[in-house]
Amino acid sequence: MLKQNGATSFNIEDIVRNKNLKETHLHDILEASATINSKLELNHVLEHVIIHATKLTNSVAASIILLGDSNDLVIQYATGPASNLISNIRFPATKGIAGSCISTGQIIVVPDAKKNPHHFAEIDAVSGFKTESILCVPLCIKGKTIGCIELLNKCDGTSFNDDDIAVATIMSNLAAVSITNAKSYDNLQRTNFALKFQLPSEEMVIGNNRKVKKILQSIKKLKDAKSNVLILGESGTGKGIIARAIHEQSSRKENPFVTVNCSALSPTLLESELFGHEKGSFTGADKLKVGRFEIADGGTVFLDEIGEIDKSIQTKLLRILQEKAFERVGSTKTLTTDIRIIAATNSDLEKAVEQNLFRKDLYYRLKVIVFQLPSLRERKEDIPDFANFFLEKYRNELGKPSTCKFDKESMSALVGYDYPGNIRELENIV
Image (cartoon, rainbow, N blue to C red):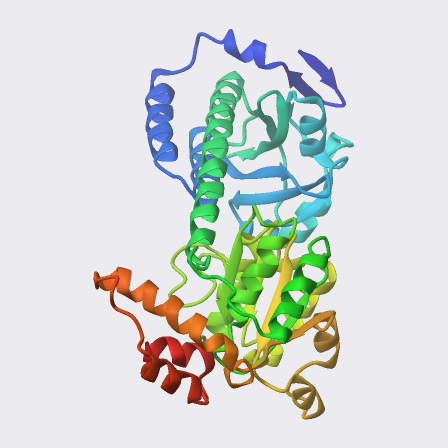
């Protein structure tokens, strides 16, 4: 046990020796454990850990503080007066009792915060809360301190005692296990969610057309490129399949390929799909939603029909391209994601820029590598291959005999048609 600047630091071993924990506390801890372990989503785990820690120690306020990506500290969840004002606040890892707790891995008790030079009073200035006493317990996972639980002010005005320290330590250990499980579940959910948006494995690039072959050769040459890609072409020309081929040839191929049809959603829904939203951020947002940009971290996002995106979302998309940073709807916490964007459109984006419908800076951010896909009427030599591919696909699905084939007259009719709907229309005809 160490004393310094009016604060007392405890080693975890000191707490383990505590044999005097109240039976009522043990019952409450078991109840809290059952509740917390029933939660799989990380935000729910953090919420219930801090609620139970506040209740069990009879504290006025509390927070879970975690190490951020930039080696700063982030208040992930808070309870008590004005908790909404301090949630998601970031501050240097060297600041505050929390910073000392996390850097040393020791439990710290501060009976009188105003006399402690390490107390980070700026947080109180933001919230209007007056911190009098502090109990700070480290959160450790596999020997590494990832954050802390910070409890503020006893409701009865007394200082935090050995019982409080023991309870907070048990809650910290429980939180560490639950956070590990929640993160594993979160990673699994992201992987499964991303798989839903992958194109079927039987989809392939078909074609002997010179323009198509040139595109495929370029894709192979550019396999190590990290640049964004813009695919242009009429509706139904196979822009999604080319996007998938680009992803499969890249160094990101083992990571998610996530597709978003920008024309299928209203601006509000599209913003939520792309960036995610926090629970309660708008009517109907009854739980946290992870956005596609977050899901695709390390992989590729295919934005189909990007010309239909509202200008308000274009601004946020530009930031993703420039900084790889964004916030979920309803949150002030900045998240980062490592993604490559492939965009596609059948619109004339240059004309849209001239008409002030599409941001010029966004257009040039996307227009790094450009592929112009030919229409099906420009590649009639590929129609027999496409027709036979679709015939085989649906013959297997419908259980038709292998003798089911096109005769010469039927194939001639297929080749002679102009297909305003391109490959998609040919598939529908077959």
